[in-house]
Length: 179
Image (cartoon, rainbow, N blue to C red):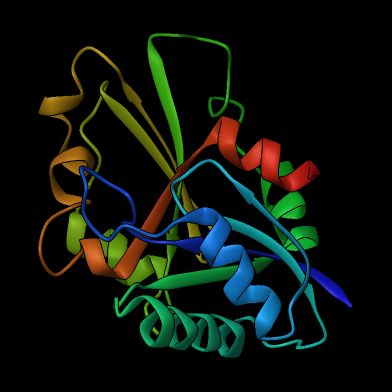
């Protein structure tokens, strides 16, 4: 069995798209997933499964959520191994202990590519944010105090872009990569 991580987009935010993590864990168990763990309330689910196609897994999980919770939630799936490998490729400026900088990793949800997302958003705002594409993800860091002026900050939740991606912090990803 392969260890996977499912990242559910936009759940349990400001009372919207509410999904109980214990109920989600039960749903995964009932559908044959093994060794299920959740992390935080924001839709990070670790599990083991025999399927080798992450896109098929994401679609199956989306269907489970639709069937059981009556919600249409975009899902991104990556193997734990692939996440660890991706984090090893992080640029030197990403994921530091600098509290003035906020570090995220943006994942493009199939069928979208990170190149398409980056093209739609445009160039990062010089001196406020940095972006580096890697695989189907983008390392993204921005100044915590001036984030509202940053181009990527303004556009990642915009209609036509927000549904193409899911975003996690460096700390969350480091934690789930080791669970």
